[in-house]
Image (cartoon, rainbow, N blue to C red; front, side, top):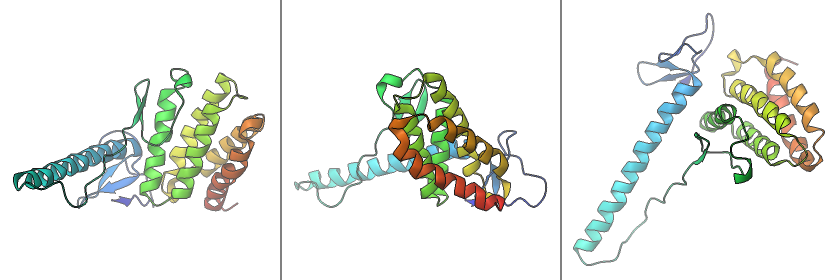
Length: 210
């Protein structure tokens, strides 16, 4: 897998009409974030199935010779959280807010976090994860404010997961300014915001040459 390098007209995804962000395989098939994430999910499921098969064969061989299971085993993988149809692999939410959040937006944020981790941007991934969870759990923000913030974060996170040369930095910085003003009203997440908003601002400011 490699990032798409934009030097002219942005390349389209091989599976949909979105802009490609990744090139997959020897043929360098272009995929957007959503399609790449779906492919990654399939690949991860195949890996997990293979791990289970190897664990089974190891136990079967030990049983056949009358010995207890020996050697290291592949640990079970944590199950993703499903919130109103949105499968979340990174963001942890409290059951009390299930059904009150925009599942499309939170799903996009979660996908972007996975993409950032895979592309070697753990700080950005952790920042988006921390901010998302804090916003969703805040008692000082109204439900409308939470949904507005998560919708903005879905755009910001998608841009963060986009190769630097194709990011819409001005759009992201404008949204960041707006979201920071809203979260400044929530005293219960001040520490989280002071820790993570600057990380995102710095990422887009450097890319924009600010």
